[in-house]
Structures are given as structure tokens and as C-alpha cells.
Image 1: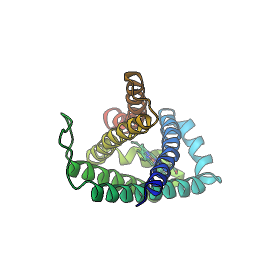
Image 2: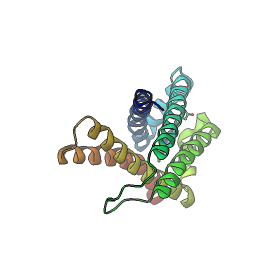
Image 3: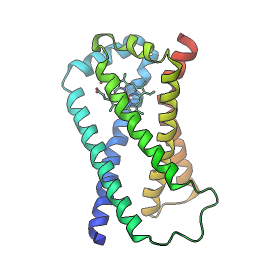
Length: 198
Ligand code: HEM
């Protein structure tokens, strides 16, 4: 693939990632309404029965598809170009196969989550979420998904910032803080249900 085309793929991937990131921040904040049942019910009643849910779901799925497709293409090009592996490796370099497995797991996690939500009774969402996280397997599955999401966001945001010439310790701390705030916010719901409500 010619260099300008590769750059275009990278930009497309980053843009699709940004769309999903905005959705994730919105989703995490609205999830926190779980801690006040009446607000959660009022919000999701408006969200599920109005004109927001379906267009937003389409945008997220299209963004996910574009992001994954561009990532696969870039990976193929890089693998073809790198006939000899880097000589000097990072001290804590994670094996490429493990990275692939974790990304595939993240994808499976997102698809399973969307299907679970689609099978929920919209008129009983709060109880459906509570029932889901009574299962320790489901809590483990979600925590594993969130762990991989944390690693993926940290790694990709650090890469984007490095490309923009911003790779100081301050930026690294900002990325870690933002990522951990996001995923801890998500994790608080299953953990609370399992520990306090079960
Ligand atoms: C433990 C954390 C999470 C909980 C408790 C949770 C809960 C929910 C709930 C209650 C909905 C229903 C909203 C609706 O009626 O549409 C939903 C939808 C959705 N969630 Fe999550 N979520 C979590 C994490 C995530 C993560 C990490 C992602 C993506 C990486 C994600 C992606 C989605 C998507 C795409 C939808 C839309 C499905 C639809 O509208 O039918 N969620 N989630």
C-alpha cells in the first residue's frame, strides 16, 4: 500500500476510534445513573423509546467496523514490510500473539454485550442489569473485557499523542488517569451489584 493510502487508513482508524471514545464517555456517565434507580429508569425510558438509541447504535457499529477493518489492513501492510524483526525490544514487550488474542477478546466482549442488551426487556432494564451481574461468570467476563479495554485505550491514546509530538510524562499520566476513570466508572456497576446487591 502506498504511503499516503496507509496514512489515510491510520487517520480513518483514529477518527472511528474517536467516535467510539465519545460514545464510551457518554455511556459510562449514563451508566452511573444506576446508583439512583429513578434517574436510571427515567433516562433509559427516554433513551430507549425515543429517537436516540437506534441511530446511535448504528453509528457505534459502523465506527467499530471501520476501526477494525482499517486496523487489519494496517497490520497486514506492517507485517509485509517488516521482514526482519526489531533487534532491540522493549523490556516489557507483550508478545504480538497475546495482543491479537486480547483484541479479538475485546471484540467478542463488545458483540456479546450488544446482543445481551438487545435481548433485555426495555421496560425492565434496571432489573435486567441487576440479574445479569448476579452471575460471577458475567462479572468476571465484564471485568476481563474492561481490563483489555483499559490496555487498548492506554496504548492507542499514547500512540496518537506520540504521533502529535506529545509524549511527555504529563501526557502519559493524563492518558492513564482518563482511561482508568473511564473503566473504573464502568466496572463500578457490576462490582456494586455483585458485592452489595447479591
Ligand atoms: C460494565 C460495564 C457496562 C454496563 C453495566 C453496560 C450497560 C449497558 C446498558 C444498560 C445498555 C442499554 C442501553 C440501551 O437501552 O440501549 C448498554 C448498551 C450498550 N453498551 Fe454497554 N455497558 C457496559 C460497558 C460497555 C462497554 C465497555 C462498551 C463498549 C466497549 C459498551 C457498549 C455498549 C453499546 C454499543 C450499547 C448499545 C446497545 C443498544 O443500544 O442496544 N458497553 N450497556
